[in-house]
Length: 175
View 1 (cartoon, rainbow, N blue to C red):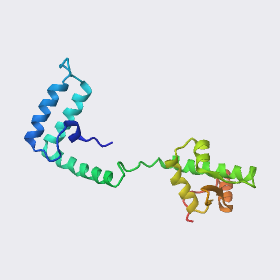
View 2 (cartoon, one colour):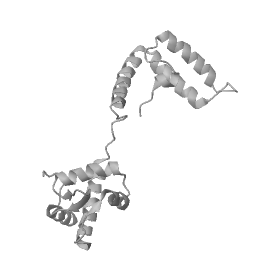
View 3 (cartoon, rainbow, N blue to C red):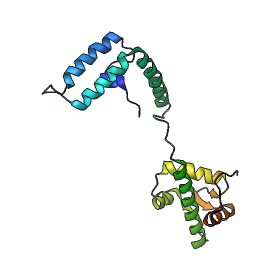
View 4 (cartoon, rainbow, N blue to C red):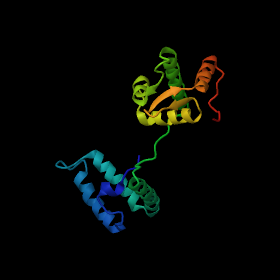
């Protein structure tokens, strides 16, 4: 996770080395654990680390590149690139989705679909993690999504789920 050293030291990204040094000394004095009135060991560590990075020309240059990238992502509404789950977790989630839709189709042929909220609750997985899995399964032709945003397993999905149960299915498949 990105740490904004400029914010911690309360200086501008345009601050020169002398200003950074002066502000660091003020902050360090204020938050040093020996200061009985305003001392705070955690904040002192953060201030010290920020100064360590920003006072070294090479480290600051590398940090500034990352800082600019983070600011660009924030400007377009993406603070951090999303972490992808481990591949095994993603594959397991896809299998669970197909099994749920398979059972739903089998148990309720007249109402064979499940909505995103249903899947969230049944799998105990947040929506943002389900969306990739559902997109993948849809693009592979294993499920369809209707205008009401409900998902239904397809014939290809049924065959794949049955193959999974037989141990023969592979996820590396083109639609």
